[in-house]
Length: 100
Image (cartoon, rainbow, N blue to C red):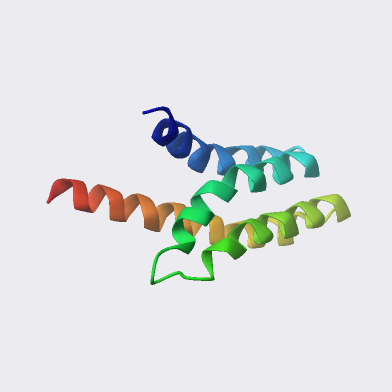
């Protein structure tokens, strides 16, 4: 029971920590967000739809951390977009199939 709770908490927490890292110009917070995103990307990597692509999502957040470190917040936000889209897509799939 503890594993699903940690799994679901780390998913949105990753984005929150990354957003705070970009807003406060702390690249290490964005790196922590990338580490928190690893379990969900590993899980989604087993999906036939996203096989091989989902494991690249934390790399976008690492790129975002590099952009924050270099002082380029616009690129940091752009590189965080794939993680946002994945969270929205995954949440919509889970919520849709719960109603069936």
